Image (cartoon, rainbow over all chains, first blue to last red; front, side, top):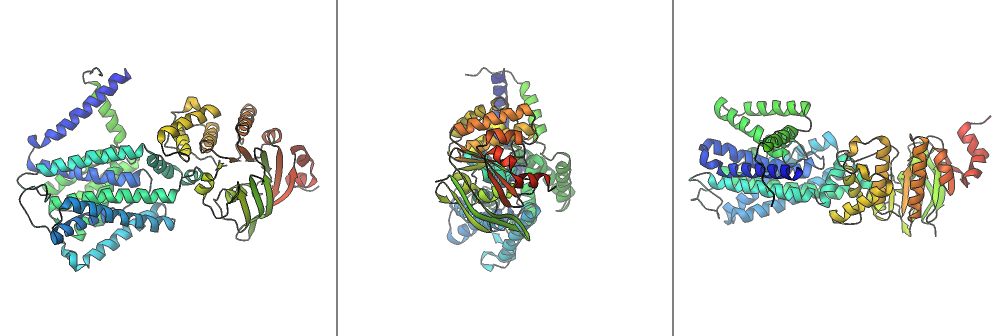
Length: 330
Length: 237
């Protein structure tokens, strides 16, 4: 029986993935744009979750890493004609170093809880202000990427958004795979141990400081890749669009609403929040209201469902799976 | 040479001298009990030995290493494991995962860690609850889990902080059997305990702390007759 249920679940998962792959053929360009933003923030939320959700060290400064990724790949592309794919890797390395530095500073100082959160906001703000005053990378104006014809090498697709859609889809699948591997490894055990009880973790031979810094570096690097994607998709970056506190908020909101320290949480959360934000931006107008709506939703979930809505989604998923025909396992 | 050797250990918290020039030794494969009234400094001593507190002065030698200045995780990797008086657990993990987290101190492969964890759970008699969330265990089982996680790190010396508090007589007998089994497996035990029903039959030797000073040491029945000890517990007539 259990084996059959497993295969029904797997079947439903395959159907959902197939539906996601076919989605661009069925929807308008605007809906496709919403889907790309959901994918991007599901990716960014997962990157955040891997470093922060599992270890319980909640960063509100992840825009710094997204911004570093965006700026490094964009600057390398515009000034040195380096393909954004290589630029993304450079951005990941620099973001990992910065993430490790932030970790070393905060954890050496023993910052916990709210104090850690505030420190991450402050460090991200320092970086944003530094970029505003750094004329080489465009200062407050930012960088406007030259538009070139569709090309994988240049990471630009204009005739349709298909290229972006499938790239972010692949990035999301890849990060979920990496996350799953890490969580099932020694690293994953240690992250969760640190979140649950740091003293107990230490008593069992876990170097909490070291593993927290590793978590920060991994999360920063993965977030930076999302920054490169954003830069290539929007083709314009500035300190206020990729390094602002609001961006950090958008990154972590999905994980909070969906469920921290779960594989599916940030994906579910992004799929709930970003359509609402995009729709309110498009149909009600202007920035501001989208944040009000998303903020209210986040507060509501945090109060009523502190573990996120993932539990409901899992139940709905299982219920749906039970309607599927039973497939014999080979 | 003794497995654990503590010399002239002093720890102050502001004006309070929690440990005052305490010296003692624990021999290999011995069970040593540490008793004393509330506030005597027993847990502080554990915290100093396992690296959670930095002593103000004194020396700690363990298995040939100078342990002073080591962090808690380093003392564990050197072969010490401890449990906590206020029971701790990785509440969002399953029992088997909690113990695996301990076992991973000696291996990088989760498969090996899980195997070791299962063996350890069998050993302490918690194998039937291996898939229960640690956060939903009873206090008694949580203590057992703490013991199992610590044991899974493969320690030479275990420091147990009040394993028997709150247990009924039958459970205490279980714990006594378990502690003897652990010692027979080659692990030395150093036990802080209030429950005399546990400490007297199980400890080879008992040390008594009072106001941060060691006031007596010896076999259980000797210590129980000691004037200074009786005075510390019951007060002067």
